[in-house]
Image 1 (tube, rainbow, N blue to C red):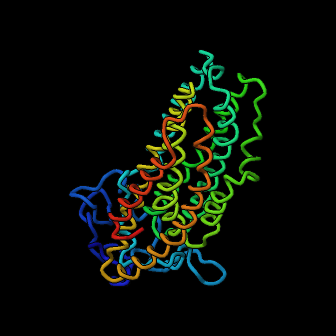
Image 2: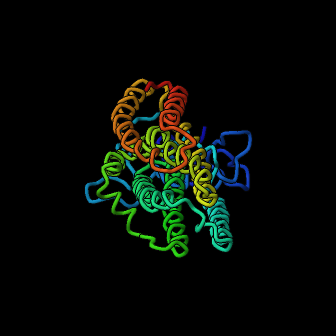
Image 3: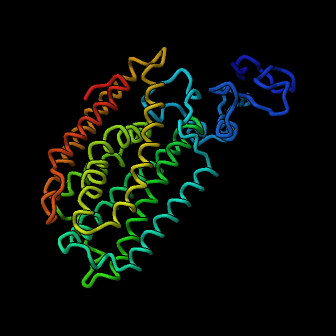
Length: 352
């Protein structure tokens, strides 16, 4: 274990022996594996912590005396907030590279589809669905991305903040992709209304329970609750339900081969975000000192946000009956989402 400031009492050179004290790598942490990964080198201990190396305490504090980061920004407790490592090991450079590749793919798909005249072949009923309901869904992604952007500021370690911020970036990118996609295909479809999605998001009863679920998450003060509610509860019950269970299933049957590849990147995004969230929550749920209390806390979050997500999912049910071709039923998709969240919660020792 690395030496801590509380046990050293001095910042003088040679006052303590750290991991790699005798190496030119200047590493002050114990890696998760045998060797430190590049992700760990550029992420671990980048965010300061007086309990580790800031012997002089916080260099900058707020007017109320609190330091730049405090543990009580979440009700969850941990014996070691620095234990978490994101499974996707994403950091600044790799994140930008992945986002750039996705954007290149999406823009290429849209450009090629327009060049081939694909939007003109969409079923007329499906065109209305894209305007109204895919147009409404972009507000879901934007709301969740905004929530995560706010949440990442309060995480106690850079590893937690990094995972939360990349999650936010993926959500905001998808909201942007949907906006641009609808605007571009709209130029090829007579009578297209770019404002219809916003109108349905604000006024259509189908979307109001989803709005309530999203805005409840956005209004939550606990950053970890926001992260948990989005990836552990909302995404499997509502996000995947609509993206995979409706858009990607019904599009091709209604002569739309363009929407699925535009949306597909979001499903890969979620798999990465879910893996990160499960690892973090698992560490906290099995903490040697606070595990039992954390599990009770997490179970209360499942109950609170699960009830909202259930209502949101059921509210969206009428959309499944709107296309001319209906390749999948809402009941079947809903059953899959219930199985999905059951498996996720089972990994964490939690119940539906």
